[in-house]
Length: 418
Image (tube, rainbow, N blue to C red; front, side, top):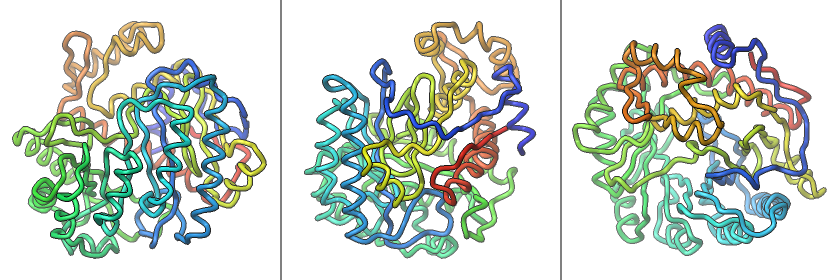
């Protein structure tokens, strides 16, 4: 696994240099010249902890949540105050954890963000199915939320049992969503669970679209080493068949594929906090991607609050990109949307995509991974699978290692990813 990621990294960056994250704590963030800047806020609280979930989260209490939000507001002002005026951004997403547990304070957070940033493409928030209630939805909408994403995982009891989740009340879900409307209602599902078939996944997607969703996300189950989940991931061959079959089903139904894992019933329905050229992240474990650096905040809620209380940014680690490393990062996450524009690449880096990666693009076309029209490279069904295949390697070789360390150390000295 590490051999595959290492060889790919060295080939694409033309260097044996690994990704080195160091404890360098910039107090000034150079985001003023970043175009297409996105915003992300992490709310780490959950009422219960799902064994399969790798994200930074802690058990909710009103007192700890309030203290955290107070620190979050200070971080937003520490960063936003570095820009003279209000910086235009694309969108704002709240992830977690369960952001809806802080629903009563979301407007306060959004107001703080909007003191420094102009949001042009809406505000999204993740919800647990238990939080999809009229009162909560009204609070979110009044705060300015325009998009919601509900972590269903599966509507079927056999898979909810495997994941340690409770049954979803579909009728209550539908009723609440019919009373309060949002621009995008996305529902998240996990695929590649043990014994899961195409009919199982198809039934979940059909149920979603019949009960209030206009967008779905189908994420593969990944067995992170630091979680307590005992679920065994589906073999790769079966996973490919399942992914290809559900992709064909969605495209045959006329759904729009907006990324590797997402499909929308309405073309305008979008929900993705990942496909951004640059972004600022606020809250514990939140990441920031700028033109020449990547930074990640501490995973410790206590240390996060303490650091911000001191008037310092809660950065845990920083990566300084080489030019080629930044290009690889750009291409990897842009390809998540299933297409890469040569024009956009050249605008971002000041050099043509074909000049830098012309040989790789020719090979990708010959292998049937991509097609090209008018300078836009699109992943084929085969290419999308192999993107998923490599993304799985990347996740286990890089993210699993980094997050595993950062869950134990608030401010590691250094992490080297080969």
